[in-house]
Amino acid sequence: MNENADHEGLRLALGGYVLGALPPAEMEQVRAHVAACDECRAAASAAGSS
Image (cartoon, rainbow, N blue to C red; front, side, top):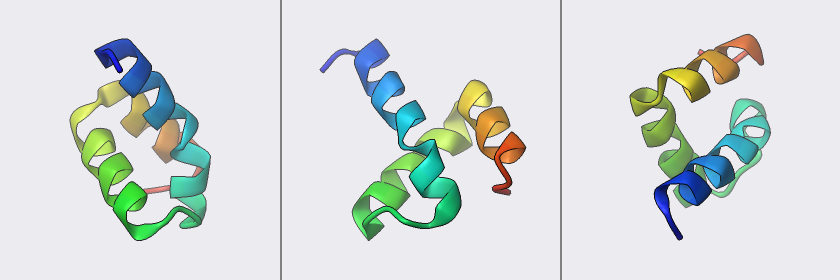
């Protein structure tokens, strides 16, 4: 997968991340991405995650 596809997949997982509905390994992967990506961090924050 390329960087854009990785980003898109992680962005699509934000809903499950905010709801805490992802498997633990995927939650950690999305959490790490959100910590490093301003765009996804803003989207997660807007959806109710801190």
